Length: 242
Image (cartoon, rainbow, N blue to C red; front, side, top):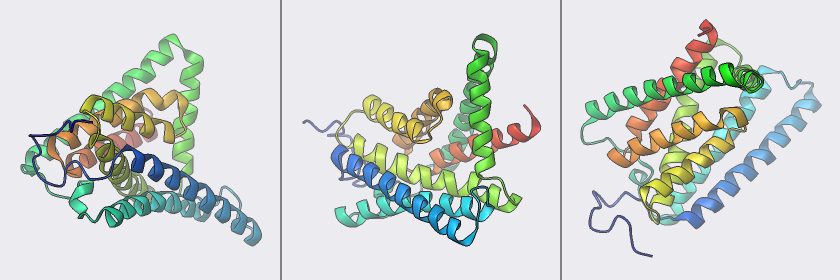
């Protein structure tokens, strides 16, 4: 297959050397490890008397899930013999511009998500109720002391998801596919893995927007900025009743 980036590679770290086959294996490994670890944690929690609503159990499950994504991304680097820049861990050429674009894209994605919610409220009330229930489950999952919630929602989750879904998944797909197909496929994976069916369309758009930022700058900084902005505004809105 012809290299879609032939003749216009900005540096040796983008796209990374792994391809769609490795991405598929990585996804399978991450999901399988997550299921096994969460199952084991639930079993241990039952033995020591922790209920499913326990803050400790929920955050241990969160750490296990995010940890599996990090382990798979790190394994891709080790097995391919490349440096961390292959996952987008580098500063963009124009950092201020990249951060500004990330902020703007994050705010735009929030507006689009809000538009989706308003459209459902007007034309599909039943789906809107399911959307609200999905969002509440997300909040309840990370409910706990404010410092933990903020670190999880605004730092840990965006950082790990950008590393995995943009750096590993999108990057690997981009090494063999052109941008529209690679971004669409990675955005679809990103939307589906959240297990929020009614929220899937806006999550898909979030995946497209962050992939576009990564494609443009070959750095996770702008996509991470967009993701943090999106989560931050969405979190504030959920508590303020926007």
